[in-house]
Structure formats: structure tokens, C-alpha cells
Amino acid sequence: VFVDRGHGPRRAAGIELSEADARDLAVSLIAAGGRHIDESHPCVDVRLDGGARVHAVLPPVSVSGTLVSIRVPRLQSVTVAELGRRGMFDATVGDRLRDIVAARENVLVTGAAGAGKTTLLSALLSEAGRDERILTIEDVAELRLEHPHHVRLEARQPNLEGAGGITLARLVREALRMRPDRLVVGECRGEEIRELLSALNTGHDGGAGTVHANSLGDVPARLEALGALAGLTDHALA
Image 1 (spheres, rainbow, N blue to C red):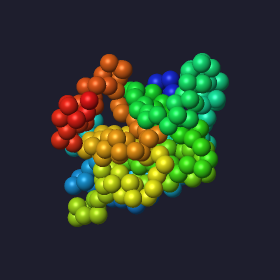
Image 2 (cartoon, rainbow, N blue to C red; image 1 turned 120 degrees about the vertical axis):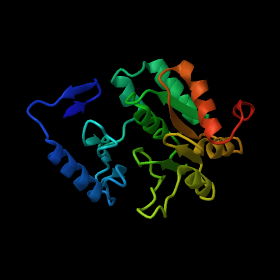
Image 3 (tube, one colour; image 1 turned 180 degrees about the vertical axis):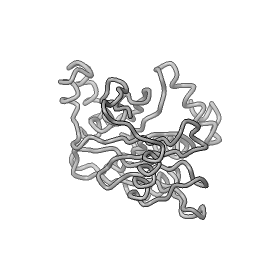
Image 4 (spheres, rainbow, N blue to C red; image 1 turned 30 degrees about the vertical axis):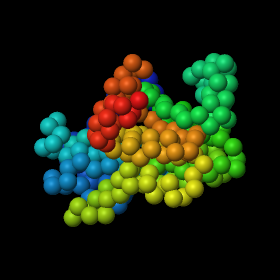
């Protein structure tokens, strides 16, 4: 068992799970999230009532044994000022971030896994005007805003028969009918990049999203890859 509190994974002292215990834990947590996991559906992702995100993988897909990843969200939202006090950036950068939100500039937050993309995006959106309607779309709802008008949409995976799935791309299209002042996609991973870019280019200023990239230099290639998944040409992304 390893725990990461923001400084890299550390082995938890005194906690050991057998393969049977790990499997029982995976099955129980996934069931608590309203889904089922077995050998025919060995990879499942759910959000529990308290907001924790659980991802589980069973053998033989997971060669080393049952894997369970639990991501616990912050209990409270954070602000740009609080992130500044923690040393994420200095006062000048904090002021610039507030100016970006006030000017309704479109924002793309990028970084590696665990870099704090969701935390920073939550803080930025919490700076939006109190009279604005913010609509967030996520694979698993994690964004927590200090804002009175936050509408949350969450994708849904298909059931065991392969029916009933709701994709991020579908939710972006639905969101455009809900009069958002700011349209946000928690993390762009595929074809939803097409709908998001279309929305941002047709008058929906102040939108935002996150993209996984290990460095700033990797961002253009990452956007090109996402665009290719959505059937977009490099010219369309430019």
C-alpha cells in the first residue's frame, strides 16, 4: 500500500493486503459506486458518495495482481490567494491569473499527473463573477468551486450490456443548450476536444480545460494527438 500526499508515493507502514483482500476491496468499492467488476469487465472507474474516485483493475489484465487506486478530493475548494500562500506562485503571478479570469480569456491548464491541474483550475474558476453560470463537464466529477452557480455534468460508462453510456463529447453538446457563461471540460482526452474548441470559437469566452502534458513543450504535440482522435487537421487546431 502506497500513499501520495503531494510529495510522491510512500509505502504505508504496517499495512499489507493479500491478493484476496485486495480483490475483495476492489469489488466492494466498485459496488459502492454502483458498478460491477469481474474478469469480463476488469477495469472500472467510479466516484463514491463522498467524492473519492476509485479505479480498479483485476488480473489477468493486471499481471501483478489486483490494483486499486483511490483519489481523495479536497474537502473544501481553494482560492488563488490560498495557492499563493502555499508557494505555488508569487503575488505577481496570482494577480495575472485573476486578470485572466476577469478578462474572460480561455484557459488551458497543463501538467503531468498529480501536478495539481484540477486544484489550480478550481481556484481560477472560483474567481469568476458571482452572477456567472459555470458549467463543468468531467469524466469523474472532481472540480470543487467556491461559487454560487456551478452546474456539474459527469460522463457515464456503459452498463454490462454496453448501453447507456454518456461521453464527454455528448455532454459538451448538451451543455451548449444550457446557457453557460463559462464552459469547462475537466480533462480533454479525446474527441471532446472538437466540441470544446468549437464552443470556445463561437462566443463562449472564459472557457477552460486541462490537458495532460509532461512539459510546456509537449503541449502542441498533445493537442495535435487529441485533434487527430477527433478527426481534426493540424490547420483546424491552429
